[in-house]
Image (cartoon, rainbow, N blue to C red; front, side, top):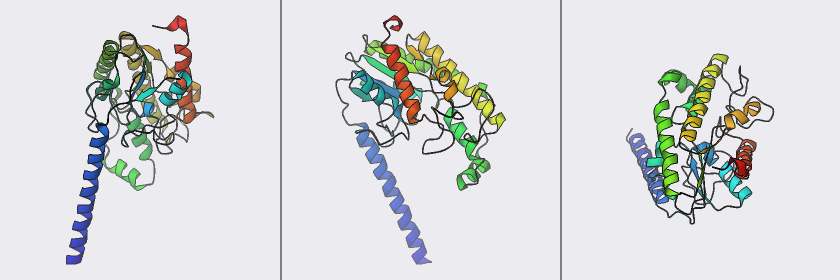
Amino acid sequence: MRRMRTGCLGLLASLAILALAADALAWWQARRPLPAPPTYVAMGSSFAAGAGLGSLAPGSPWLCARSTAGYPPQLARMLKLPLTDMSCGGAVTHHLLHGGQFFQGPQLRAVGPATRLVTITVGGNDVGYIGDLSLLAARHSHSLWGWLVRSFWPGPEPVEARDWTTLERELAATITAVHRQAPAGRVVVATYPAILPPRGTCPALALTANEAALMRTVGDRLAATTRAAATKAGATVIDMTALGQAHNACATQPWARGYAGIAPFHPTLVGAHATATAIAITLRSPARKR
């Protein structure tokens, strides 16, 4: 009994040390100096960071998981611009403007007078879009995680109960702050790519038709709220929700994954390339410049 108790205490101590080490690493990474000049700054959540799309970008905080193949680095290569990638998995709009994620300051802090381009993709975490998609799919699985979700998750919130007002207000405020800090810069807001088909469901989603219908409404409302905030604040909108309708997770050439892989319901490599291409085409069109 004493040996068992000693072993348990040792395991708990080891876990505590690992947790402290992880916190220390995150704290240190959050305080590293930013690269300069910040010509192109990418901001946003895991949809901008490129979750699950390849190797970790040099200098990325490990908790942010910025990929070398997300749409910002692809766009930077297309436009031949130096990139300062501030995107971070799990970010909500508040983190872009005010900071506080993984000991980090605002993502906005990288923007300055030399900045010529800022791209933003954010909002899904603010309203529980991807999280609810993943939990809904998980509770149909026969895994331990599926059992835990079925046992303890109360289910998705109604569409109207989600905080759309705060999302729109904070996204517009973030864009306004970017314009203030980079008067000569262009702000481009890309919506999330279409994940769900226009109707029904498919095996890749692992959702019932009713679950897909609910989350389709959330996704459409997210795109509409994003468009409204970006337009109000004077940003250019790249509507990947509309552009990607034929490339949803049920399509033969999807721009977003279903419930599979490291980052379920996130962009595929082809989807990230499509977003980068759509932004590049718009930026190269003089008639559509702000």
